Length: 261
Image (cartoon, rainbow, N blue to C red; front, top):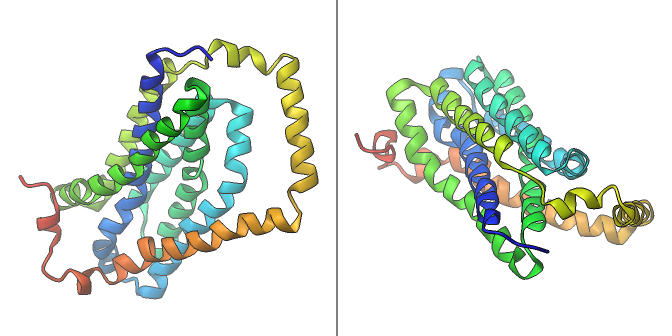
């Protein structure tokens, strides 16, 4: 594989897409106290809202990768970003627990696509000995997004209200999209491989593996293990934290969490 300095620009796009991905999903966690008061949501209703996102996210993990493979990296990543950015903006129109849950479901449908798309960016532009580094770079965007979300979202929420907070994070995603579409190009060698003998052979082998092993006990067990672990993780991260927020950090207000004026 021929490499160029442009690969660092490409992986930086994946990094910032992951930052935006976590900004979008963490906005609800920051705004939860305000939304729960305004919509009079109890713990059960709020849990249903969180569940809607997690259900869609879990289901989309099954088809987001194949969709991106079919559309190719540039268009597939663009579709993911456009979908979840629009879904984030739609949150600003929520009028209660049901509509909020519906918009969370729409957000979850496409946010899972960030990870296979980011992996494709890394594999298309980086040689094997650099792919772990590239994957680490774009994956670190999840931590950066989770760190940035509380002060940024709290500041917007306090100054302008909760609807503009969702609109703002959606607008950031659209800004990424405007830069991504003209900048991303699949490396020439990879672009031509899909139509050649090597691409056809790879497709046949992949289909054979999927057809023969997708529903074996070992394959299903391998898939269930991260599903179970992820369920516990997201229960702690997404559901219990906002519910117990006030009790756990009584001394910290939204004003103190926001960016100082």
